[in-house]
Image (cartoon, rainbow, N blue to C red; front, top):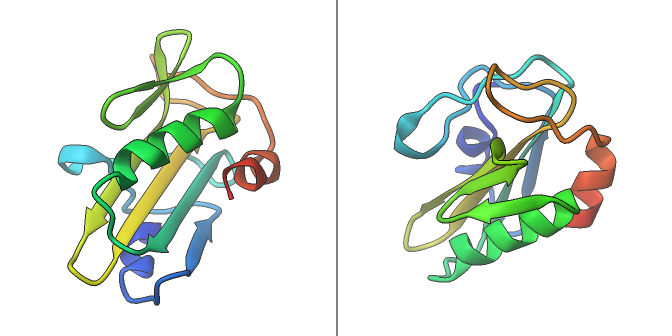
Length: 126
């Protein structure tokens, strides 16, 4: 899959896209988000547009990740001061696509990994 955001863009409000891996994941400012298969939570939610969505998504993602994870506004999740995940919200007048990526069992150099199962974090976020 190229990106959960790309797939979600064509879906109805209320849809959720989860991927085991993606080849075109991205963060803010078109930064790439890359992780080996099965090592990250990669999910996009199709929601109604809301000006508070980015803030709400960041807080919810940090809480779902558990103790020690903090939100660095506007879209970074930090664990022990290192990036463990991120949030990307893309909006149109009709819908908002809220993507969340969290390093679970692998992280690029300098980043953190959460060390929790994907289903556990996904369930806490949903």
